[in-house]
Image (cartoon, rainbow, N blue to C red):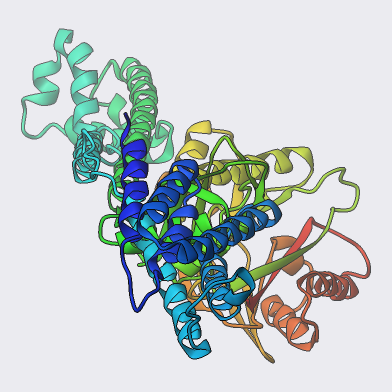
Length: 608
């Protein structure tokens, strides 16, 4: 016999004992206990049999008839409620038990009952039954949900420790790659080149002792000056070559050998520098992996044990709506906000997820919303639902764009991401040049950022890993700017990341602030040149991001200030309208022409 069946038997036999409790000639615990236990649905037949036997052997005949009528009314009302709304609220059952008992106590003469009670006494009995049902329903539900604490084979703390150990290993590996002669090795010194040349030519020459062993011989200085000039100019110095011919009969051979050695060393140096760059790129990627593991280890803390009272309340509130919660886990994020994972099902048919959402919000005493793409209906099979705290703000965005005259596609690409509740990310990338090649380059940048962000990377790490990939890609003269704005919809804080990107504008009421950048595009150098800034946004503010084409062809001394004045003069609370009107005014400066791809992203922040 499983534990659940055993609990049902215990509940049913306690019902027999409840029939013995007599107060002033009435038995209020009979309807109160029955209503509370009947709400559990399972084991109802056994409960009814036990309660009938208890009343039959322990209650007077008149009381037996009265309370049997009350129990039948309770059963009828609860079943009707479950048929209509899939569940029955506790207060409905409690009100039914109390009201029906009070009514039968007052009008009992209709059933030929004797010794009728005072109406006030009957009302007090009804109130007592209502309160007792509300209390007993929670106690019985808690007893049915009582389970021994499960001990996982590997605790959360142990898992976090393993992740941190992995992170340390990746960090150590990154340090190893980074310490491999970090930085470019300088071009081979003149002394090294001299040894390479003289070791091959001068060692077999009869005049070697005259050139290199006599203190007054100028050959050493001439050769060093010759190699220095070759290193700096990239070719042999004819004047120095003529001076050397006065002292060395093999000057022509020496020059040929010097050119050969110089080219060989320069080629080796180019390959070596490329190898060092690749090592540094790998080191940066390993470092990013170490950061991600550390972030995962400290990201969320399981507080289910500490908040058991909230979770029990959730199960109780869900049960009232006909929803049965099998498992639930409450997590606390780094910022103190809660995240809930729930596995829920229903006995019959389907129930809208919004009913579970109401139960979650009521039980946790926080406004909770399901994550995007969650199912809208709860079925018999049992589905897992994830809830986050509802953000304070919402972002509504709009876009306007124009393709360069004569081009088939735009070289600008953009993306609006909401990887999780409370986080809005706007990305804009401008590929160098125009047409399909520029479009492909900026599209690759946006896709990489999207994939990294959806995988859980933070923006800084995602951009650095993406830059490493673009550096190793190695296409010449194909670079892209990156402009990213990350908005925290809980606090309104906006983190702005710029890599070679154009200006960003923030409109607050009637004033506009301009944020500029002087960094290089992604893929140019392995050491990412990223500029960041943090701004606070509030209700009604606008964030405007533009590509280079919007500013470069205004033909004014200060294009950023001109666009700033444009935004200030536009009166609208619609993000799409704002973006379109900006482009319309830019075209007035270009005479209706589109000399480069133009893209404007506008986002309005509103309190919910």
